[in-house]
Image (cartoon, rainbow, N blue to C red; front, side, top):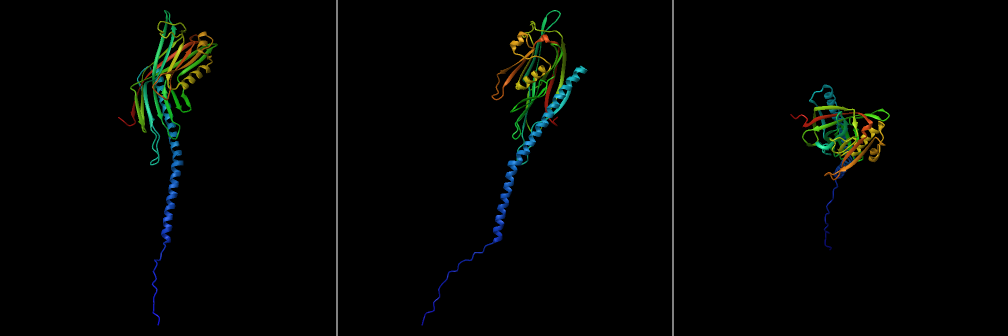
Amino acid sequence: MKANTRTAQRLRPHKIWDDDGVASTVGTIMAMMVFLAALSMFTSQYVPVWMEENEASHMSAAYGQFAALKQAVDMQILAGTIQGSSPVQMFSPVKLGAEGIPMFAAPTPGYLSVYRSDSYNNVSFSFNTSAAVLNHTANAGGTIKLYVPNRYFIPQTLAYEGDTLILKQSDGEYMKAMPQFIVTRIGLDSYTISYTQVDLRGDDSNYVGFGTRGIQTTLRAVTTTTFNNLTDEIGPGNPAKNPYLYFNQTTWYERAWNSSFNQTLSAAGMVYGTPAQLAAGTVDYTIVSTLRPNNDPIDDFYEVSVRINPNVVSRFTLTVAYVEVSTAEMGAA
């Protein structure tokens, strides 16, 4: 008789797969990947384009505001000349920086500065009187400057100095608004010249940020003098022993000033030459640019000297305007 035996068997656990849970996890991961890809595309493609448009739009607006500032000063000079009274006040807003994109790109700040001695303009010449040869010298200076270190658009500087509007960027300097320097030919070798100096006065100031600053200009005085008797004789009041009608501009924007002077004089028909040719009397004018020492390791500071043969100038009219500059935040008391 056989014994009744049982074979013990181990019970293995039965795995139950939840297909819905797997699909949910995979779907979440895919959604996150799509979101991150879209976010990456937005930040790497769309944000730079958006910010470039913001910065370009701001520079366009700032240029318009600086043009309005020059126009305001020109209108003050005109009003002061016609009315013969001062002071005449005008107000010009300037927006410092460009708007950013919330959470994605910070705004771009701007640096606004007003410097009494950042540039210097000198006019000097000798003229005959009934008694003797005398020298006349007029000095002016000052610069209002906005520098915007754009990160997506081209970094640019706008400067108002010597009644000009200058744009500076990496590829050069451009005089967007010329000075009041008018040369007219009235004969075979005879010219009339009129020139306006603007002397900016007030305390030096610097501002950085994104808001809007107000620039108030006050015309304190304006004088206009006409000379019909320029000479190349050197009078006792001419310490530089300069026999020419002499314009001297110290500036950070040498190429803009040099080009402006040369363009105006040559367009009127004057003949350009070297200093030696001018001394010999074979040309009408020369322009010499000299590098001046400064503490800026990047930008160069120049002296642009224009020398004109006074014997070809039948009449010279010089206007000097004294303008006080003050700044304040828009809305501030």
